[in-house]
Image (cartoon, rainbow, N blue to C red; front, side, top):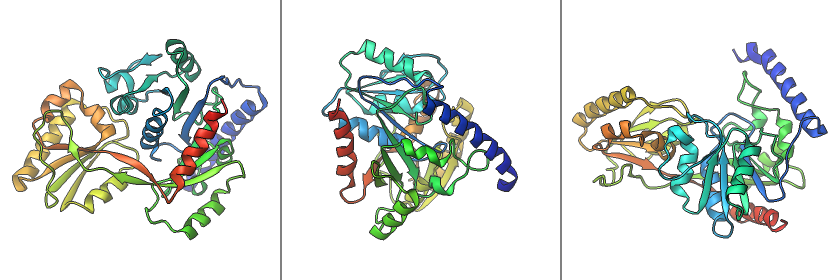
Length: 349
């Protein structure tokens, strides 16, 4: 099938190359800003661990700077510029931006399809903002980022991928040249120096680019709903994993390494759950609970944003439902390298 799709990939790749050439030559306009704008994104469609890295970076920077995060707000039902707060819903702002709102106390979070307009509105509303993080905007070249951070998944690196529709690449591998930092995500926590060298040879960063390796750090599961009297999940219990992310396999493998059994309920990325979906899940879980009274439900923080809708929550909040947070860990001393590169960029403004 992939071979049959290759001609379409070549056509799509040619169109994107022409578009990038037009931006490089100034034929298409790219707007820069006098204050720092950091772009985080990838060459492929989803699943690279972008949200945990954005959360980590925003949290670190907010210790020293006034930070704003701007996303498109994929999956939201609203249009235009919208500043989010803790009363916002996933349908208003999208699941990922709402996740940032709930986790980051001192960071402004907004959504806007037009990133140039969104940045201008943020700076106009909050003139004291020091830095804007643009989420998933590597291909949004209407904005000229001061620093571009490019992510690639260890299990699906861009140098082994093909353009859509034969593969998952949104633009050719040559796009990596715009990155100031390249992060290989979801690595084995014990990746060897020899393997890191091998990856460096394949990615071929230039002398201006920093290459760092990160892995997933899983937190202990926490009760999903506030006020729930859920005790810590029993390691001998069965788990129903409710997942709606681009690459659920690492989470499933992690849970399988901890719990007696895992039943995976996989939904598409950014899935808009209906009441019927939730009632069906609840019915299946109650059947599981009859076999194993210690059984629990576990989901990701991102999916939990979608399940917090009032009409869904009312059917779930009496269940032993947990959420598992993840964060990036860095190999060796590479967290220092990652943050020092960003701080050097910010110090130059």
